[in-house]
Image (cartoon, rainbow, N blue to C red; front, side, top):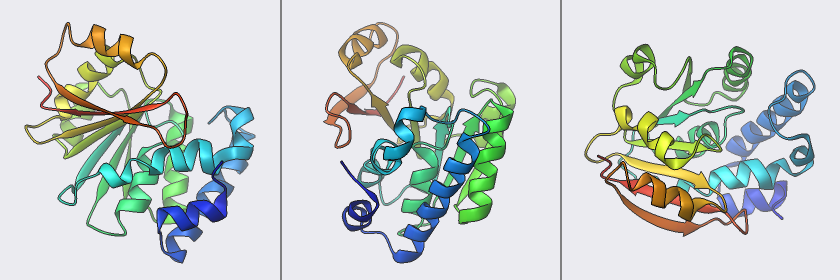
Length: 208
């Protein structure tokens, strides 16, 4: 189980970035009492269940990536975590798409308090105005958003020829892949999650 100190060691972030994560944690705990951002049972394990689960994607983000979109951001996982981590090493902006107004306000508050390089878009990810505002990105991420076949449909407008998809999936990943391949053409790689024993990072490329 990853705690705050081990997150600091294993993620190799600066102390300044670690302070930003601590501010993120404080904001999450404060706002959780007002709105349901994460499962209450996971709050004591936020460094493992949410920060580390999201942070493991950072090593898969190409050094050439400059723009990213996170679909159904919720409390900011994994998109806001990536915004804090990747900005340490390269110019990088994450578009956080969230339809819930209250969660969007929370995300903006975390951005204000941490200085994260992120932009919040309050609206549906499949809405024409959202797609027009963001456009094609270098990468797309999502966690606990939707089954893969539906998620790929929402992600497709943000995909260009070189776009990378990083999707955190659970025990039903094989069933989701089988169903998605009936409607979509894509290349994929399964990467075991470092945070969840039954979790998988699904790396998706050349989506059509």
